[in-house]
Length: 231
Image 1 (cartoon, rainbow, N blue to C red):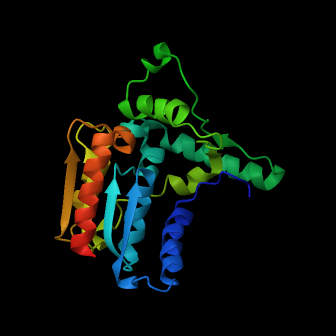
Image 2: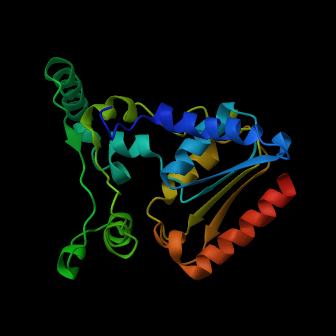
């Protein structure tokens, strides 16, 4: 409490806890645990795999570096306001302590008319509104998080210490994804493993990798090959 706290350390711990949980089952080979992270989960998977060597093969799809975007803005669009937003988050934390009142950032995605969608200049957010607010909307889904969460989010970066990954690494990304730069940065910094591949899906944006049948089939085939070869 309060709900909707978004703490990177908790998300990374969830991945480690999943490895804990799986290792308690009879028949599970703890020397053959693989991990897969999608979008923001990809960033947290990269972070968890840096130090948790129970994760023997690491794969991501359309990795999203949440901390980087919360800090710098998408495509580095909010660098000039970093300090102002940190001040806002700090003030929100103080208000929670003194008054119990919680401030929130973001809003749940909703279906937008075509004329409004056309004003969104990035594929990620335009297609994301359609995906999360319309075609694949979930009644309990929300993009809202406590403003004070930014104290942790803005200091987090999945690419920090990525050279600690010495496990086999597969990063799958759409060739037309406007988030591709995040996977490329992590991949370039992953100098601790020689068994690594940045695999591009042709004619694919970030959101399309979630649901387009031809892309999903290609991804599943690639992942099956990766895990069979490395686990």
